[in-house]
Image 1 (cartoon, one colour):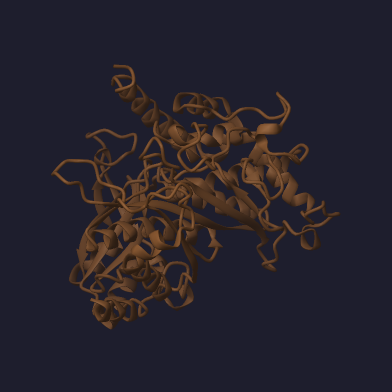
Image 2 (spheres, helix red, strand yellow):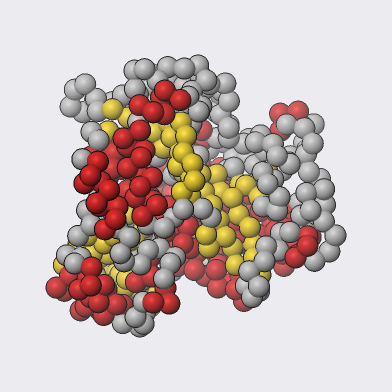
Length: 466
């Protein structure tokens, strides 16, 4: 098995990968020809034409290499109502056109390649597409001379199969430490799984640099190098697919659910971000490059305006960063077995202090600690850009930086974050500038679907009520 894994990892190096070698690809105007060329050179038999819907579910069609030239040119058809979009069975097909620069060969199944697609409906760009929402914000930043780069912490739980069919997947019975974070034995019991994942990430050129056992039993995180925000979003989408697929190979189940166990720490997706000059590539959050005097962290006025935008819209952002009913079992929940939720409750910002919604872990960058793993990988950076760019345009004041933990702030010093999905949706509805920046077609569709989801939840009785 180890030899086969290493062979698969070597094979995975051949084709272009997300965010790399884009200049070497044939013209994007004929994506089918580009993919057919790669298939012929690299003996790829099938392509997964992939998109992510509004709820973060990945949808794909399997396209044989023999047909990829024509299907790639004309697009693969999907019934929009069959995915999580605001659509009906009467609507025409969504047409998915592949972006060859996102091509990834499945390291564990190297005859198959994954490619992210852009969506069209009736010959027009489909504005509900999360990838489209992000691209609009990237274009908006570029028009202002900027590029957002992001790095994310993707937390997940690795569970054993249930004892009986249909039962609840189990936590490793030996993973019982009161403080399980970084616990060495629990980490190494999953060495076979983790080392296989690391090998694949290295083969794909993601530059992974560390992995650990996280703060909940059976919880893990693997980190890779930051990149332009679209490349990172595509990688997060593929990573979730890869983690689940590799887990199945080891007779395990991976879950990214925000709060799968009431007494355990939830799965967060902390997002680190910096803004760069589009021409020079320099980080404009650094006072040496962003103009004006720096603060105690040498953060530029540009950085503080961007932060001001995040904080002025953070209540509405929560509808996107914490998008499910279960998200609010993590956000503001009672302390779990390990002693801390690691999730913010107030719209405050501090220095290198994990109790605030935004911290400065390493100047000159910020970490948004709000999102959980239910967040759509494209909508998370889109929301950060939309809010941050609004802050730049309005020169938003982030207010004073907290010098004490969030729980020691005076009452009224920072507004509480929403404590349930309905409140978060209402805050997004009320935030007209943010909705306008993200696009009304997208926001209307997203709010409609999430309100329906809330109503479905309200139709259920919980065990606690009974």
